[in-house]
Image (tube, rainbow, N blue to C red; front, side):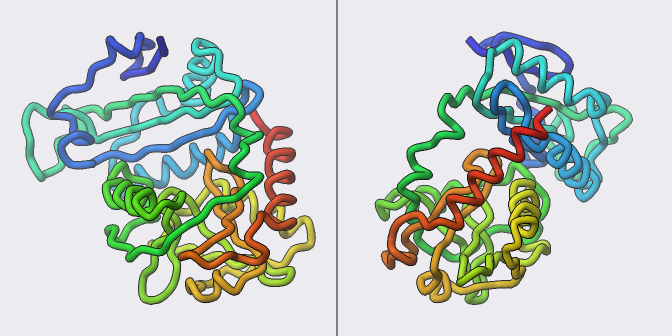
Length: 286
């Protein structure tokens, strides 16, 4: 049985409880981060911690007292649950006032709720899926406008995953005004020649921590990076395509809306980027 963390306590998962009045439950008034664990160490923790603070600030959400100690909480959960490869999910909500109300509760009387738990994923780095690639469909992006804030409001991405499943593929890329924004839980990329193309940062997409690292490594490897919008037609005509996220690292995309990308198999650039990302991230893990 997993040990989880709830508001300062390490508890067996079946003893963990959150109030029915918690605003994360009632209003999706919460933010989250997912940090991968490789070799028992945390990948890109500093980036996730920085983005978490940004999300809290953007929503004018009080910073919980535990914020400076989150690294130690993560490490303790890794130790208590014996995680070698896997993930740690962290969620902070505006807390649980005494009743339901659209108006934010007084931060002097309502403290944030902080929850963390682990997911054990042996073989996360050596995923067989990465060797064959994934297939995606395109769907209309119907999320709210502030996708740069990593909130727990994930209903439409979940619906997108189900649309992909119904279509017999692995995931969906969301499209707005004719251009790809991102995947349901990942950033999207295409490769044409020696150039990696991915949407520019803005409120329309999540500012991916893995995205930032992969683009940095790509530039260091003398690859060209172009941050701009691209269309589904461009993706179908690309040499390669891939996604990035904390849990998939770099994952090749081999088909978009039924059309094979490149050779229809994972290409050398995405494979090399995955290799570089895993190698460099392991060196910097904490």
